[in-house]
Figure 1 (cartoon, rainbow, N blue to C red):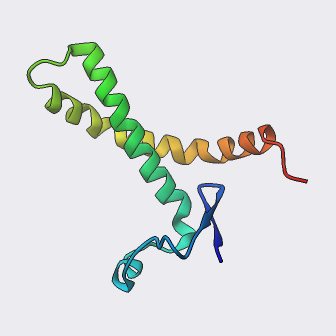
Figure 2: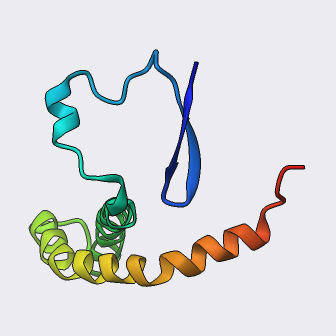
Length: 105
């Protein structure tokens, strides 16, 4: 037996043999499903902004002394900007994916 869940516009299959959390306490800490677009934008922007900061700071100033601090300084600006950008373009991307992917049946 498995269940389907929609995450970020995508449907994923959840197996009962692989629980998403192991305790009721953890489940109580989860945000309601209506906040899925915000949670998706938060994770997407956090990861992408950090990866881009690593690359751009390294390419721009090198990997020498103070690299980590320069990355964090860049991330302080990049993450909020990326978050709002993902929120704004997500509906467009979901629509483009729907137009690009062949539907079953």
